[in-house]
Image (tube, rainbow, N blue to C red; front, top):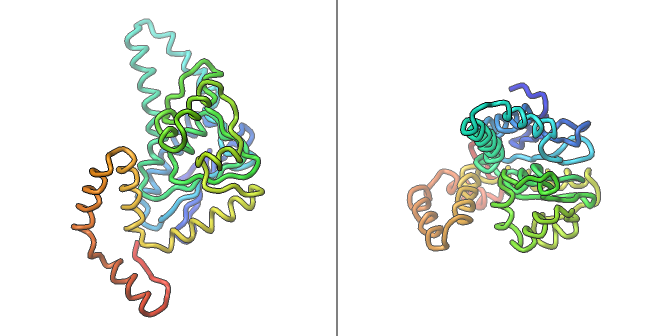
Amino acid sequence: MKYHHLLVSVDKHIASVLFNRPDKANALNKAAWEEMKMAFEALDKDPEVRVIILAGQGKHFCSGIDLELLMSFQQLNQMDCEARKREALKEMIVWLQSCVNAIENCRKPVLAAIQKACLGGGLDIAAACDMRYCSEDAFFSIKEIDLGLVADLGVLQRLPKLISPGLVAEMAYTARNLSAKEALGCGLVNAVFDTPEKLYDEVKKIAEMIAQKSPLVVRVIKQHLLHSRDHTVGEGLHHVANWNAGMLFSNDILEAFQAQMEKRAPKFKN
């Protein structure tokens, strides 16, 4: 698949997805949002891919929605029917939400490597990833209120399940920047690294560790983690019991045990 606003590659079961609009601080226009959705849907189906690293080309991770895309919404005012205008606007919002949802719906773990700006829609995207890591120069902001908007691509729904709801409220009401140090302290990111280069190297090491595990089990763990986030403990236990009752005796278990007995690295099928 050919992309114009992303750099996508796969090597040794690890996919790399880079936002590639560095001259725009990786702000995403409509085509870039569409490519992101297509990329994660394609990587979900690619049997060679076991884990994904999401990062930004250039200085910044992602500064959100390109202002030209936001301004294009004004064209809807030319519609003479108020109901149809509102319907079209809702369809656009739901479509943008689906682009972010594609990250969460991808069965492969997605590791975000964040440097400098992670603003607005960029934070929506980061919140949909499984794990987040950043460099010391990273900063995070729910920027929409400064544009007279309510954030509507998932950050207000996902972030309170990752960090303190009170801190999310503060960020949403003030649009202030959350530093890398604060992001680590509140659990938004797993670790902070000195430089963007060190960040990507260390995130790749973690991705390599994941890629060595059973891809079947990794995919199912992601499903259970997302299920548990949105359900009670009892419902989560019921969910995992049903899965293990039906799938526990996989070839991967036999390979894992055999590898341990033979003191070698296991070799799992995709």
